[in-house]
Amino acid sequence: MKEVYYEGYEEISSKVDWQFSHILQMPFYLIDYAISELLALSIWDRYKLDPADAIAHYKKGRSVAASKTVPEIYELFGTKLNFGEAVIKPLAARLELELGL
Image: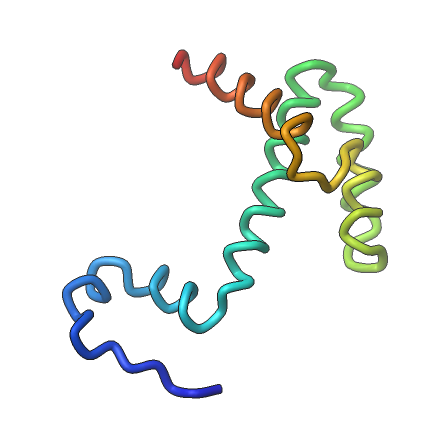
């Protein structure tokens, strides 16, 4: 991996050093975070609707660890890996409701 030079960006780098490094050196971290956040919000939303069902799906999902693909793991958790409006919009609405926005 090539070394990244921060000359001229010291002030920004000092404030957001770890985020800056992730963006420049490991951009797929941001995608990984988004995928993880989507799963966490989906599990939480399912729990708010039906706690027993959410817990059952959670136990299924966590039982496979990394032995399945990401989409297969999502399905075991009771959701789908999908960044479309049909998935994001209800999660955003749940967040707005819970946060009183």
